[in-house]
Image 1 (cartoon, helix red, strand yellow):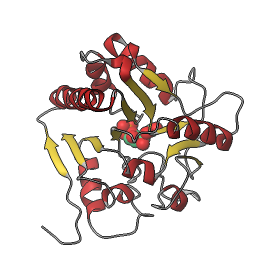
Image 2 (spheres, protein in one colour; image 1 turned 180 degrees about the vertical axis):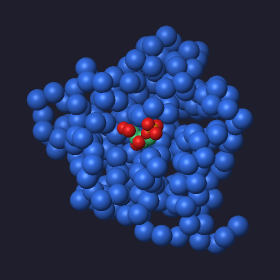
Image 3 (tube, protein in one colour; image 1 turned 90 degrees about the vertical axis):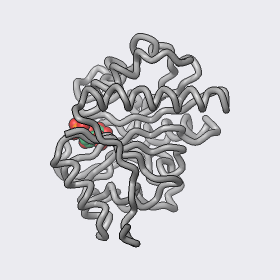
Image 4 (cartoon, protein in one colour; image 1 turned 120 degrees about the vertical axis):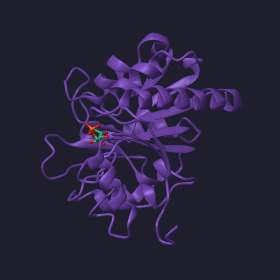
Length: 237
Ligand SMILES: O=C(O)[C@H](O)[C@@H](O)[C@H](O)[C@H](O)COP(=O)(O)O
């Protein structure tokens, strides 16, 4: 193993259906373990198109969802009625069936500025008094994860291991609306960090990010290099 390479643990599947079934079962098992240990479990999920099938499978798992708190790794600064809302995506595909009994902490807040909404969401997440048990991240082909986008003026602050804020407002060239994103320390502090990627292009981006180089170029590096335990990668072609 290369000394400066931060090896995640790869869980590779023949197809995306098999990945969704396995990842949803593994997340459900880890949530149930946290519930048994702590009386509650915190799950933070990403938006985008990749997690939809996994969300639908996870929504049907038979765990005590009333003891699960779901929140978002990041959010587009739009109301939950908007088609680009991650809140809407999670409400539609995850908080259904058995998982309809989960509690949900949104990041967006109607009538608030992005910064005010970030502070409001941070106060709710900080009040949980336990770290996130499972954070599920996606990956963009530009190397972003969460809303840590290359070229964002707030990228350094959001990926700073010393950042004291849990949630930050962030903008970046080319994205249509402001974002709200969890910061590096709160994801670093998660019991388990999962990267759910599909396709060869994203696998290549991850391999590039595992090589030495600046976080600014491939921001996912900020979590590849700083997790309490090996990042779990779930991948299918
Ligand atoms: O709000 C978002 O879009 C996500 O949180 C973002 O970080 C996502 O995980 C990647 O952009 C991958 O998105 P796809 O799954 O659509 O490729």
